[in-house]
Image (cartoon, rainbow, N blue to C red; front, side):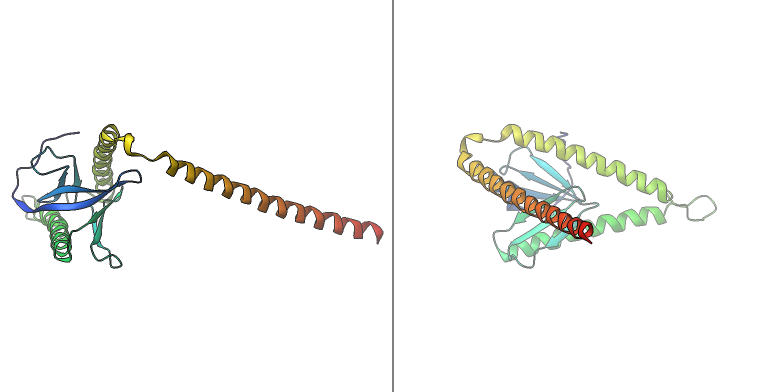
Length: 204
């Protein structure tokens, strides 16, 4: 992963709970918003652990959970939990503003790109725009894949309770058993119906 961090002015910073995975659950992470990129760290002062591009992201304020909100990048969804309602409002507003400002700046650059005759020249046609968006999303995906790889390397499996996985496995086996019984019942019913109809056809 490229660990070169933007030197832009900090819009907002502070601790948020971030959902990591089913094994480790929610973890406290330090976040810094610079322009249209949200960086997060294991703790303040350390090298950043990951970054989230807000250019094509959607900020969603969870209405059911008072302190919960999420960022949908189009590739993955990052779930966050604020420590207070005030913090949640500040983060959601700042992230939404950063996202909208980036979109406005992008459109302004396209409109202001004029040729020598003063006519507006589009930066790219629809196909080229879609291609550039795919390239951008691919870059974000590569960053996320590198991040997942690093998180897996840093994962402390000593705290994982194996009984939890055994319980899940047992439930899956029970579910598979009942599914098999259900389909067997359907098959036998179909078979019985078939032979019943065949019997009546033969005796008529």
